[in-house]
Image (cartoon, rainbow, N blue to C red; front, side):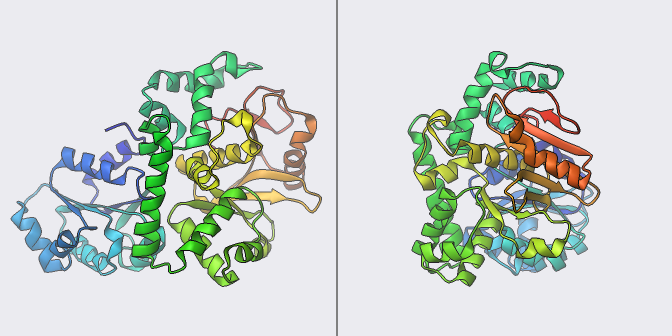
Length: 413
């Protein structure tokens, strides 16, 4: 198995009785992670997408009997490990997991699911205080380099913070070449490992499976053609302020259905929604959000545009998507990410609205910046007395007052 950064934290959950739940879109590597844990810990692995496997754990009695057949002893002192892949399909399974947790101190369950929407509603009450949730995203850039067998570059990236330079390209040209590939084709493992035109085919397979398994078979979306048009429109307008009424016209859906579909796309990890930042939180609810795809490869697939960065006029939005996704993959809460825009059009790409602090972040896919490129960031810093503000760009520049420079490979705040 290629290294995933979250794997060490999953290993550490071995002795914790709480149910470990891996949530993420299909094809991001959840099954691979579960199988690797199963290989290390032993126990029983079941694919709940297969009905016969579901039947084996569909009730408390079936669950315990299945474990006993596979070597479990109720009096054993060591943990017996159970791995349930794609468990979200059956709502009644959460009550079974609750009974197992409450009555057996020597059973440890790892489970995976691909729809946050249903998992949240099913486990919010029944598994309260009984679970660990780990979000599994497509590869972040460091993992991408590992999958490309360029671990040597990850060390150079970690040393960047020690360096002052006007042009990072001259220091690590291979990193920027791979970054361009990552910005175009994204971080789904199968896509990263594919070569040439096979990357497009891998993306097609991922999206076909997503539409069939998530939208049609599981969530029973009836107007799938309209939903595809909606996804294409969101891709074309990636990073722009979202007009739901306009989306409804384009996709021939009513506004309520568009809102519902957008929420489904978010909770099945296709997109991320950034609300606008206001000191008055009531205004955030009614103001238009921005929508970004969580993976640039998926976004570019819907746009049918795989041109390199130098031949694109949307590279700024792709870079913003990359930065937002990297921040999420580094463990930031999705609900903390917002954007800022004044009536005069001054903007800040990302506002981290944490409970204890406010952080402003501007993303620029440029080597050389002009002073007016930071007007929105400076305005926000001055207006809200922000103690931390960051510029993410490709080159070096003089630091402004209260504005820190951070390279685009170390997005931890």
